[in-house]
Amino acid sequence: MSSIRLKTELPGPRSRELLARRAAAVPRGSYNAVPIFVKEASGALLEDVDGNRLLDFAGGIGCLNVGHADPRVVKAASEQLARFTHACFGVTPYESYVSLAERLNALVPGDFPKKTLFVNSGAEAVENAVKIARAATGRPAVLAFEDGFHGRTLLTMSLTSKVHPYKAGFGPFAPETYRAPYAYCYRCSYNLSYPSCGVACVDALEDYFNRYVAVEQVAAVVVEPVLGEGGFVVPPPDYLPKLRALTERHGILLVADEVQTGFGRTGRQWGIEHSGVVPDLLVTAKSIAGGLPLAAVTGRAELMDAPGPGGLGSTFGGNPVSLAAAHAVLDAMADPSFFARATRIGTAFAARAARFRERLPLVGDVRGIGAMWGIELVKDRPAKTPAKEETAAVAKRCYERGLVTITAGTYGNVIRTLMPLVIGDDELQEGLDVLEGALSGAA
Ligand SMILES: Cc1ncc(COP(=O)(O)O)c(C=O)c1O
Image (cartoon, rainbow, N blue to C red):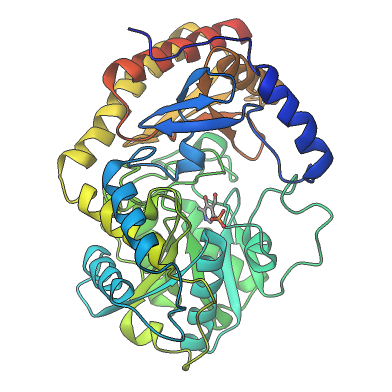
């Protein structure tokens, strides 16, 4: 039985009416990838205001790994809602903050004492990781990567790579932020090939420190274990270990930005686990609380304690309702089958996507890990000319047929998968059928 159920053309009349009101009342800068207004959601399905049922391959940009309206998350959050909604951890603390910190300290890689700070969003968590790294090292500079994304606040926008729409017109940017090429092998900045390159993009950083910033001034390297907004770029297996060795050589802290890769997306709790690398600080958000706003910085206890009392925190950071939801998310993830499911989704997706690539010249690259897969579309394969308009057309054709997808990539030419990990096998295949039809139509 089909899980997609369309009663109207999409967007339907009520969504169109709301879109007109939205255009008058909400700034256009707060963009909508899909012009369909949601009424309710469950698992991997969304119902819109016109009674259409859509399959969700976006999960609110990767925030719903446990699925929409997971009953355990709903129960925990509702019960907390009735107890108290806010006290401010910086005024009168509560147990759930401490116990969730204890759980994350145990789950984050590293056989050493750790501490965790809770804040509200991924960007706020990255900002705090940088504050902690600066306070701990006494150094000002931060190095991030081309095609990386770390948020939209001033500091995180400065670390973010993609210019349009994230940076253009919003300068001047935060000082002492630097950027070097990532291991984006499909579009290698050095025109080399893996493995014969010997992961030269990490070696090149030694020279970078001669030309752009003194190495002894660098507090932290902030890196995504797999590029998210940058196009679901999975670096080769020796990239992160080599980067870790470089940071250790120079007394630089390694900050893993796991905002998009964390909480099972890559088939493990954390994306960085695949590399065996232990970061000094690890930043999480998105799927941590089943759709409620929460983010965290977890790291070596002595680094986390570098800022003095009152130097960290925010009014709503570690909201008790979000914390209750996050406890339920971690309970759900304690079941090993949760991560196995992500890997199964990825295997099924990869098998179908490999066939897309054989059949459709538009498909330039298919890459991924766990349930984090991307399809990079190109106008011609030898030149790898990004097929931005075709990618937008594929995403549009998908939602018109009841599949919500979102794009990624510096050139906007990557279709990515952030479906809830509870998606059923039949639902997944149905979504892939829609995607295949949309890709075939654009080829
Ligand atoms: C890797 C990464 N870091 C940081 C952020 C910013 O998170 P937020 O939108 O919650 O501020 C994002 C958001 O997409 C992200 O993917």
